[in-house]
Image (cartoon, rainbow, N blue to C red; front, side, top):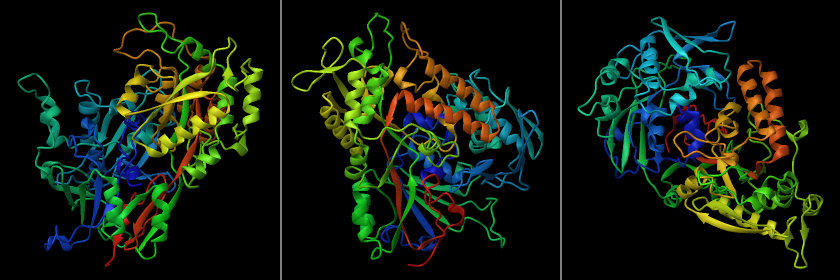
Length: 597
């Protein structure tokens, strides 16, 4: 999926909070639209489901803008889309001090912005100190720069024109990967906007580089630069003449001269257009796989299989025992006792037929998921290495419940210790068909166990509010992939995290809650995450995060379901594609070439 490469700058909080699924495809231009001499250059067209909200990276909140940023900005270091290894970007090298608290980046010689001005260490220091660490500028990027549980920020200083030093208050293993991919902004263009205010006393920076700005005045350091933007239609980019990368023969990269990002909301129309030959690439869903596979040879495209995605799909229980400011429990106390009984959660895990889900809903195009860490990560703990799993076993599920004190009436309905029928609401968002289908199957599977799950299919925005308000019981949910770094899930697993939804603690700015407490196993996960970021030895980190995965598998705040395979159909005229679930088809866009039809 293209978005893995295009969003290397993004922050952790944006990645897991929004849980966005990339809806990008690649299309060739319509001859009727681009019958000009300029249109004869090599070009590709990406598709966005929405217009941008801004062209200012730290203020962005839209998918469209993140697509554009990946094209016009490069990172200090880059992530290989196949191996996830870190590779030089704008920085030709980096050094980590012996005490693991200082990282020194050395920039490549002769770097320039897209307007031809020099790119130096001053730009890096300005970007961090004047923008990302400026409390007057509301940006989610600041959250990812907080180090450890203390929340302290790194310090940044210039050593000379090509070298800049970051110092962290304590060793922090993910810092290199995080800081290496964050967007650097041009000091010579934006410094005045950061230092001056408008008539209302707000920094002028907050209104700088809006979508009404001339696109050619948006200055970047990446593969492409913007040429034009037509709202609700498209944005056009051309190759940045000052981009640093060359191939082994000294030829300028990227080879493709122009990128067009079309704004098209309806994905059904994209499939029709792809089949008619109008698109160069299409993200293949389980529903469309069989049809597209049959037409693969005739359509002159290849379907690439990247293996399981790094996203997660799960059934989550609301384990929160707290009360609101009126003293009312967030979760009905009878149901809360069920959810907080480990045997109950484990019985539900054994009652869900995930193999049937994989076959019927995902057309066999997926793998059973067991862990919050993706299989591509070197920190993943496999079942073969000791991760507990829950195979479909209705009899074992029933025995677990009986041993825990549950019983059945003459109609086969499950009752609790006080003869209350076990019935709860199963929440799922309406926008994702496969997730709704999974919820329907779970409802049917639980019915066989004597449990009545009342399905509630609603808009995702409503679900977000329910999660924030702790107003839910059981949820068929998911999180977007956070890559190979386990700490990308920190907000989910840290007991005070903003996405610790299965037992959400008090959040700043909300009314006080009463009686909230973290369980011993949640506190142990806190300890493991704190240890994991301080440990820089990967083998020792693997042991730490292995223990974390074992706790999650034992305690089951989430029951993981099926991880779909990542497929993308790409026209054969696009050469040198190196597809993976982590990087997608276009992580190496700089070396892709387009041959004649």
